[in-house]
Length: 248
Image (cartoon, rainbow, N blue to C red; front, top):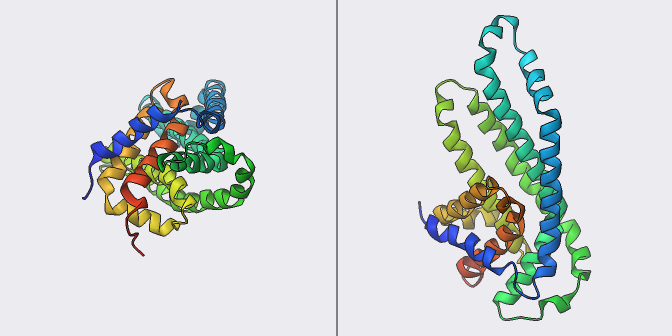
């Protein structure tokens, strides 16, 4: 596969370095606050409901399997964690989509030499809302069937031995699509064409998305990950694709 995973990961690290850039901090704030609020809600929900949900799923098993409850419990516990993780990620991305699109736009302007990005104001946000939400729905229609397929693989004996690797690669690919889509959507790159571009250098995309996934598992880092990934993905777009001839 073409591309370089280390180059992809480096785009995310460079995105972190731009978060405090004067003129961009205002546009970083709302995605940051959205991520923090929803992360706190997810933690609270897990603490409050985790045992109830796991016990409910275990109660659906036939009685003759009760002797292996101790073995099945970790499986259902992991399933609950995955569903909450991906569920809250979907909600966070839907809420923050217009703000992420605006942040990507301002970062691209700065990368191209426009330093007065804050003067553009927030009026652009209203124009972005319908397009941003429509694009998030397109991503969901791509994402959910594949999520169900990977979930199904988790329960297939033999194949499920590879499920941790499959989950990681699937998550890395989806994180690349999720965040690289913001600058590409701003530049009128269609959803299908966006996927083609990422596939053309798949290892770079997986390197970027893989580090996003790892960051989500690190406390405190995961709070600033959303705006960091948006900024990093915009650098990725500008340096890899923006000035090249795009495939049709």
